[in-house]
Length: 75
Image 1 (cartoon, rainbow, N blue to C red):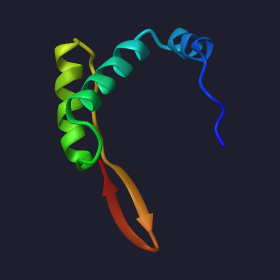
Image 2: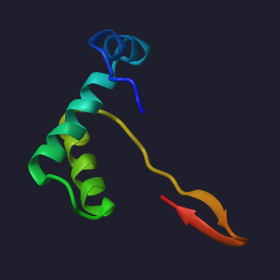
Image 3: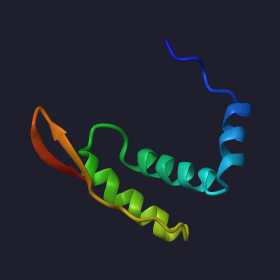
């Protein structure tokens, strides 16, 4: 079982990267708008839009993985 996150834990995380709070806010806004149950790609597109609107620079790249010997690229 996971320990509940405290306000202090959240503040410590935000101290590490000043963008953390804005990124979390964007992710929560997307989740509140759509709720659970959509494909990851729908959330991804919406989160990218929220980050753009918030002026948060980001980039995506492919990560090469192997699953049981089969090469795959994951965005």
